[in-house]
Image 1 (tube, rainbow, N blue to C red):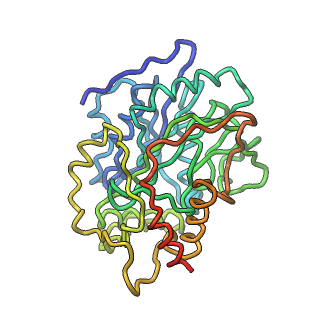
Image 2: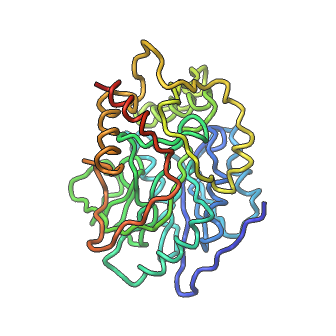
Length: 352
């Protein structure tokens, strides 16, 4: 499929950036992720880590043939950047190579929808000359198990920062989920909250389609093992984790809302090639099964029911790395999950 181009205003430059390591081997939709952003960015910077010999991430990216893409090599140091903070470090390395006014951050399992691209560009242009705005916020659609189920559970974050101003004081934090302002940053303490400031954000009006939990059960097991290794500071454990790992158990999908909207066009072939539907449990509940995922726990199920029933799905008591610019309303959400009035009541009853 040809990649269309959405022209930005000449006075504004938009950079895309990400980090990757063993992206192809761990079943990341890396090509789809990059392709989804290419139409609106002037450059796309990739910090490519020291991947295993059997990973072909570089070849897949280079096959896109885009002169916007700039790859530079990095070596991960899980001793120095422990507890998942190497993700933030790699994010910062990619950020430092960007030359745009605004920087669009898309992780390897995140994809933009083509319908949102004009909105993203318009939002960047609108807030370019407002120095009080540090970042643009995106709604999140967290898919689980397959491409038909999307989380609305309290346990999952609803929005996050994905465009930041090109400011040297803005840094990725912890495991690279978000960003904060850090004056005099030492370049190492990504897990420290003290001395950081929340970014002032406005909503972009756009969405992130998060496919990080949509893999065949075996590769998903490898991904979880790799993630745990990065967070537990075990040198060499990532390569060990790829051997003889158990297939991931997604649990019953019937209790998770179905997605009735449209996926990004760049995901069409990947979705069509899905071949693990027979390995998934489409039931709502398994009698006697103990919760193994956070969203299955009674407290989160009850909190989710409470938010949907009384607050229209508003995420209560959420920890956020940003503060909204006062007086700017949030856009109306699109592509919401299928309403579940009867299922909501059953879920709440089962949580009690």
